[in-house]
Amino acid sequence: MKKALFTIVLVLFFDQLLKIWIKTTIALGEEIPVFDDWFLLHFTENKGMAFGLEIAGEWGKLILSMFRLLAIALIGWYLFRIIGKKEKSGLIVSISLIFAGAIGNMIDSTFYGLIFSGSYHDVATVFPENGGYATLFHGKVVDMLYFPLYSGSYPEWLPFVGGQSFSFFRPVFNIADSAITTGVLILLVFQKKFFPKEEQKETETEKKEKDSAVSQNYYENV
Image 1 (cartoon, rainbow, N blue to C red):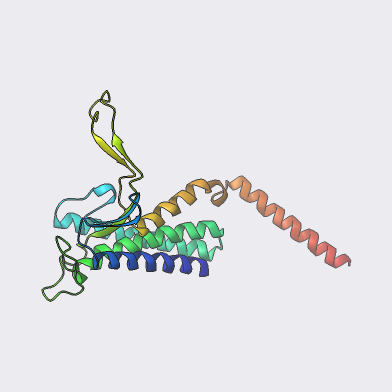
Image 2 (cartoon, rainbow, N blue to C red):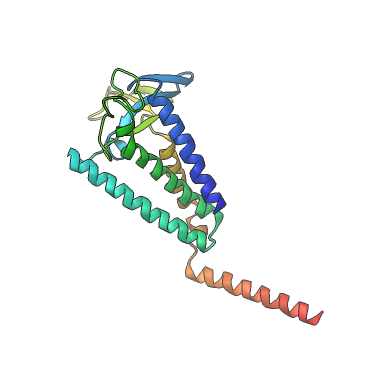
């Protein structure tokens, strides 16, 4: 429980701290260099899902928010379940990262529209007199981590994109996104360790029972 709680609090603290600082420091589209021109804090906002996808209309945004809440509830239930079963620490930490990241972005979608003014052409203010830029569940997710490691142009002979410029790595994301991605990667890399087959589970159980029996016999004979 302590590892899960520590992971969740840590992710949420730094995620929200950086988002609020960005919102109240620079306007939308502006950026702050961190390391030369390959690591920038570039302020952008995501209206919907990953990669800029969104469900159109007011109801679409509300449906997306409800789906996120449902996903958070299911992930939270699963996290509580594996903690109770005392599963491997790596599994608990990975699910905690995903859970924290989902909550971090949900906070933006749920409350930021009420708390902040708009960020277009101006720095956002907290609790503006005329109200926030959106209603409950209609806020935008704040993104800022940008790593344009390499910029160039596609070869002319490539169909459709020949001659066009590109940048790697183009997506702008946040700490919550990073937590979700890290959690998923941990699950993928260690899935065999976290989710062993039933035969392997039975073998491990038999081994533990055998070791326990040997220890008991030893102490009885001493």
